[in-house]
Length: 251
Ligand code: NAD
Image (cartoon, rainbow, N blue to C red; front, side, top):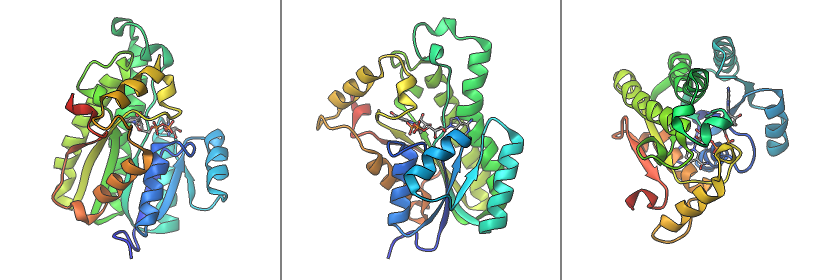
């Protein structure tokens, strides 16, 4: 018996077995949920099929495109009916904006990172809203760089600040419909996305060093917190950013 028995949850952002979204999907399934995965494009689909060993429960969704988002959620509605939650684990910025000086960030680079990493939460929440059941949860992933100037995190820190503000406004907007929106601020973990940040190994090492236990957080630990936040067990938590970083944020 799991606390998500019979629930259907959409997980956006699995790229491979190191993805935080994969940690979330595993934890959701451990609690009895059925997971529906969205993937960005054909290249990503191949990776996800390799990981899952099946093409079942996969839906294409490129969050850069309103049409792709609309088609994805229409497909989900048609094939699965209503859903009980949504995990948004998606971010992107140009490599040159994750290094060097913040004053060199271009207008285009700023827009792109904000669009994919922050606006997409608003866009997918709108698309999911009509098919979300009562007491559903939406969870997104953020990082400490939203509130502190972390070396090289630059453009993504700015986008994550917008993402965290979006969580609070969406939460206020959607909670009257009994849809809860929250974020997990995860500690640094070696994934495809993090390798875009210059000297990311240093970021992960520093992060590990700053945990009181000197042990970094895992995708499974982030996933367990995600399962809780998606579930009605967290019914009192609305518009919150919860650190799941083994205490890095304490120092
Ligand atoms: P990841 O590379 O495994 O996942 C990033 C995902 O974003 C990929 O699946 C990619 O396909 C998807 N994506 C990018 N552009 C997209 C688009 N246009 N449409 C649809 N999908 C798109 O890396 P991750 O580290 O697991 O990242 C997941 C989330 O966790 C991100 O929001 C990231 O910023 C956040 N996060 C990561 C860390 C870390 O240290 N790895 C820490 C805190 C927060």
